Amino acid sequence: MRNISLLSSLLLAAFSATAAAQTLTLVSWGGSYGRSVERAWVEPFIEETGIEVQIEDYNGGLAQIRAQVESGNVFWDVVDMPTPDAVRGCDEGLLEFVPVEELPPAPDGTPAAEDYPPGSRSDCAGGGIASATIVAYNDELFPGAKPSTLEDYFDLDKFPGRRGMRRVPVVNLEFALIADGVPLDDVYRTLGTDEGIARAFAKLDTIKDQIVFWEAGAQPPQMLADQEVVMTTAYNGRVFNAQILENQPFTIIWDGQVQEASGLVIPLGTPRLDIARQFIEFASSAQSLAAISKYISYSPTRYSGNALVSTHEDTGIEMAPHMPAAEQNMRRALHSDWVWWADNRDEMNERFAVWLTR
Image (cartoon, rainbow, N blue to C red; front, top):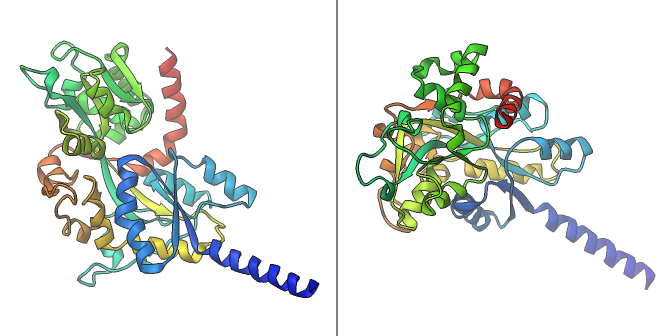
């Protein structure tokens, strides 16, 4: 009886281990984007493979991944990560290498390596979504002249009222220099000098006493709806959802938008490496990337994915005009330089923290 009991225990343990190995933990951003990921990637992946997926939210950065890898206790399998963090994590040896040759080709057979724009992905990332940080305003607060440029966000005389701003240097420094007259092609060259950094902070100083800082992506639309601010920086997808699904009277100012790419990475040492790679391969197809745009206005980074953007799943509206990469929205758009931010993020975070206390 004792041997039978032991055998039963071993079989149960083996079954439990196999079941656990077939449950993937995906870490993403929550909110409306997180729901889009669930509908566009997770649910179809589960249906196709039978592999369960647990979704967790996080706020970015490498600290949690670094702690898992260094302790040898990796419990995240796939992380939806901004490209600058993916580059740093790859350079630090915290992430598995994701060969572009293993990603699915475009529908016409074009290899994935030729289907991604240059510099749009890390060597440790698959997938690929482009979002934009923009300025948005509540139309009801501007019965007369309405803001239309990034310069208007910094013009308290012409458009008085409080401004919402994310409590980080990323994008804010770029916005400041663009609004101060720096050509798009010179923004990062300017930020590469002490004088340029000082110029960016000086421009931020001009509105500092009217800034209401935000940290979570859900906050800017709520701040606009509550009329806590008249204008705010925000993620374009969050504002889109408020406009379309909640019928909020918000307007996006695409002028000066800063586009950022993200990708799917695998923390080094996950015991579920095979299914993590399987999920990334699934989510990296042009069809999967385009599926995100059925639920939120973020663009696929793959050329072939953009060609598949169609209509919003719940409302039927055409999504192409709401994409950051739409031609009419790109007239003065800046692509975030992820190499610059990978090299300078820590220093800029420190400088921004000091600026906040002044």
